[in-house]
Image (cartoon, rainbow, N blue to C red; front, side, top):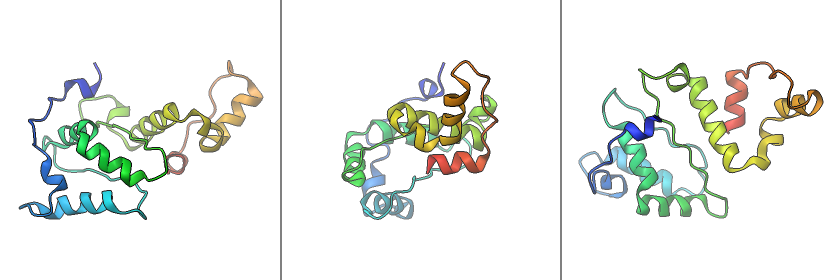
Length: 152
């Protein structure tokens, strides 16, 4: 079963503080709200925290909350909004608990949504399969730097 299916749905209004101006944890909320409202900022918003502190539930809430989704659409402006849902967890596979796994999951989700970017984002791999054919053994492993460059 996929990790997302194991995450409980948040209680209604659990993460409404993300969009509030006044809240006891307003430092975190203001960072998220500022990020959402910044037209110049087109970088990912990273969520981190201690184990079992609710990060996965927060991500699931962000991905399903209609108000937050509307803010994200405004944030993306004229660009198509692409969202990646990655749930890292320690008991999972290497791909579910490593930096390279995180980047591979993000890259897969982004290219699944926008396959026309494959030649641009994965130019070395794309050229390899063009020359060697689709049945050829895979190209060399991606480096962390290549993965980061591709996701950016």
